Length: 242
Image (cartoon, rainbow, N blue to C red; front, top):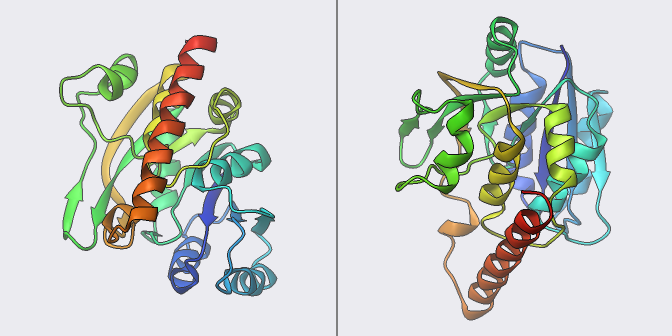
């Protein structure tokens, strides 16, 4: 079983070593590591080339203009050749046995989505999946529940065919926030099998994300534009497919 790990990167050079080291040192080694350089200007490209020269499993895909994490992930999905796909943000890290744990779980239960737990570094707290959520409740748990679940995309392993189909139905847009939720809803709509484990497999950097940075007027406008783009994406999806 081969896993593709997709890592969108934009101006986070300071995090690249710890993120990539956590991937290339996985105890499970049958990996394809796709790094999407989303037109970085901070030296990320140089670091990525250095790592790719040391590890042949690393593939670098480059956007000639900054397209945002949603389209960076889409580029990664379109080029993935593994049986399963994991997303990893460029400032997060995997635990050393993460892929091995995922592999063993999928050998026991070959589902389209396997969700796992994560540790928020700054808050110093663990988050594990809700074991009451099943495949038939996955979509409703994001959309219809009174207290909807967070639509995190980076704490799950996905069957590659599922993602290629789901991302082909998604609207292309630039967004700096909320894209995880949009992608999670569309993926959940097509998912037929799902399970979860309580193992903590990701260390989530809950301090460096865009939602935790101080806002000026220009950044607030980008946030509002992102919300508008995502709402339009939902409108297109439900009009055309759902």
